[in-house]
Length: 482
Image 1 (cartoon, rainbow, N blue to C red):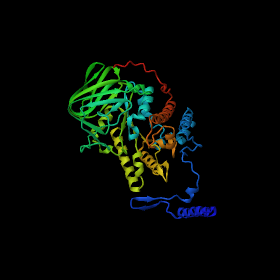
Image 2: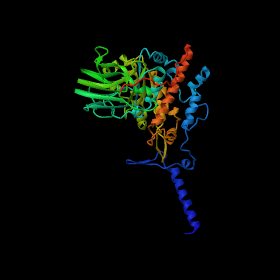
Image 3: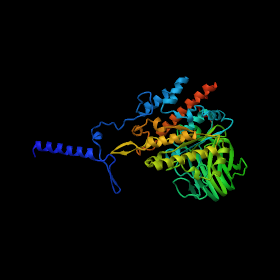
Image 4: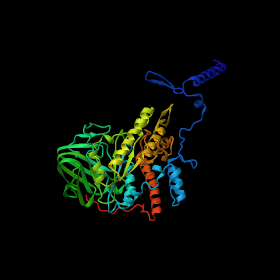
C-alpha cells in the first residue's frame, strides 16, 4: 500500500472519530445493563494532569505533595496572633467548620480535658471501615493522653471482628454475636449497646486481652481499670499480675446497664476476665483510672444512620455514667456511590440529622464533631479520579452539621482536595484500593486532626488568659506488671 493511501486512511479514521466525538451523547448511551461512553472532542484535545489536586484554600496555590501539604498546614497553625488565627479559621483547609462560626464551641470540652486528671472523661470515635484496626483513633488518642493524661485502649468488643493493631484479644467459647451494621445476625429488640454489637453469654466464658507492641502509642499499652459493660444477671472477675479481683457494679441504678469494674493496684498490659451468668455483653473498657479515654468504634460498610435503631436504654446510660465529653462521627464514604438522585440525597440528610439529634438528647453535655469522608478514587472515563458524587455528599454533610449546630472537619480538603488520594497512594499513605489509609497515612490524618484541635485549644487559652497544657512527649516510666 502506498504511503499516500495510508496517510489518507489514518486521517479518515481520525475524522470519523472526531464526528463520533461531536455527536455522541455526553452522558453516554445505556443498552440494557451496559452503558456506552465516548470522550468528547474537548476531552480528547485537552492536556490533563491526572495527579493535579485542588483545595478549598483561597490564600494561594496549595502544595500537592502530601509531605509538603503537612508542612504548609503546620506553618499556618503556628500563631498566637488573633488576626492570624481568624485567617486560619476562614481559609485553612484543615480548619474546623464551627456551628454559626462559634469559635467557643469546644470551650467546655477544653475545660473537661484540663480537669481529666481529677475527673476522668471519655471520647467516642465512631466511623466506618476507615477506623478498623484502631487506625486514626490510636494516634489521636496518644496525642491527647500525652498532654492530658490517661492510658489504655479504651472500649473494645467482647469478640473482635477485625483485628486491632493496639490490642490482641480472644474469647472462649465463641459467643453468639449480633451487629446493628452490615455484619452477622440482627436483633429485633435493638439491644446492641454503645459499640453497635453485642455478645450473648449464657453460661461461662473466658476473655483475654493484651496490648500490642505497636510503636508510637506508649500510653495505650498500660491500663489499671477493667470494666465489663453489660446487662443481665451474672458475675465476673479479672486476673491481672497473678492477682484475681472481682468485677463489681460501680453504680447501682434502674437503667438496666451494668458497669462491672475493678481498679488494679499496678498498671498492666494484659488481663483475663472470667464471666458466668446470663448476660448481654456490650464491650470491655481497658482504661487508666485518670485522664482521657478514647474509644475506637469502627462499623464496616456503615453510613452512620443506624444509631436510631439501637435501644436507647443500652446507649444513654453509658454516656451519662462515663463522662462522655466528645462524640466523633466519621461517616459518608459508604454513601458516596449512591448520592446520584435527589430522593436519596434528601433521605440521607434527614437520617443523619435524626442521628445527631439523638446523640444531643442522650449526651447533652458532649460536643459533637462530624468528620467527612476522605478523597476516594474511581475509574472515570478510563482513569483514576475523585468520585463525582464526593463533593456533593460533603456539602450535604456540611448542611447537616450547620442545621444541627455541631462542628465539621473536612478531611477531603485537609488531605488536599480533588484527586489527592492518588498522591496519597503514590506516597504509600493509602492502599491500592484508593479508599483506605495505610498505618502511616492514618497517623498523618490523626496528626492533622490533633494539630487543628491544638490550634483551637491554644486560642481558647489565650482568650481566657491561661497557659496551655504541654503537648511535648513524656517519657513512659510506668512499670508494667505481666
